[in-house]
Length: 67
Image 1 (cartoon, one colour):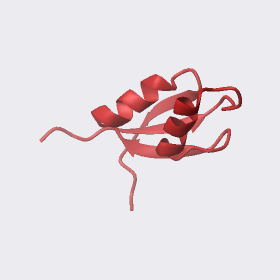
Image 2 (cartoon, helix red, strand yellow):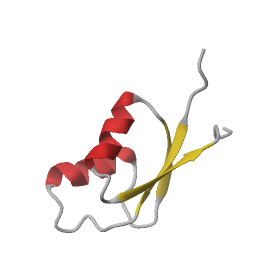
Image 3 (cartoon, rainbow, N blue to C red):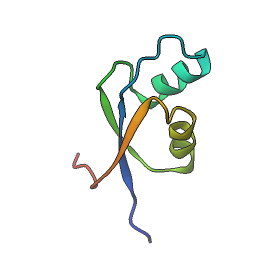
Image 4 (cartoon, rainbow, N blue to C red):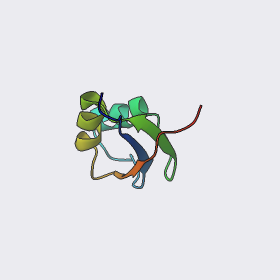
């Protein structure tokens, strides 16, 4: 089985003035405030969400988080 990839998604631009769809995408990713980050397993669904709001976020690849 291939090793899972994880990404750290950080909101770097404001959601003010963005379409509701983009605001809801950011909220679904768990990032509601500027400079807040969440770590997600990189799945096709998460990848699509990141592409939709790519102009608002910074994405970094990270090692598997410990629980």
